[in-house]
Length: 138
Figure 1 (cartoon, one colour):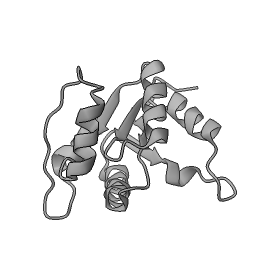
Figure 2 (cartoon, rainbow, N blue to C red):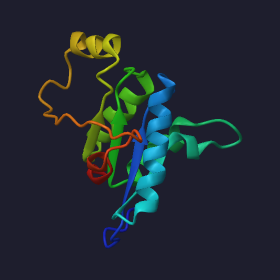
Figure 3 (cartoon, rainbow, N blue to C red):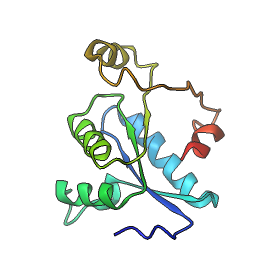
């Protein structure tokens, strides 16, 4: 159960294993956010391995216990889409990211034509791969 009196907000970051550079970027961003002193703390599925395996019940429990959810939909990973839907169903605030420079993935997203009522702001990364704006979003 969440402690709503907590100052630090806990979040879960859902992303697929492909493309791998997106996962590396996200894990690095999670580390920076968690060390930054901002009022947010993030976990991803990589920290949830139990005996080398990830159980869906564990992921869903993490989402349920979180204050918010971030999701990378770059590869339209089925697990990520399910986790995103679960978070929306649980009325969690969600932040969705997508690497639009991967043209094939972006075109698949546009062809799927869902989440069309969700507004977005285009963010760019700095030379280190993580923008300060992106860090402050979470």
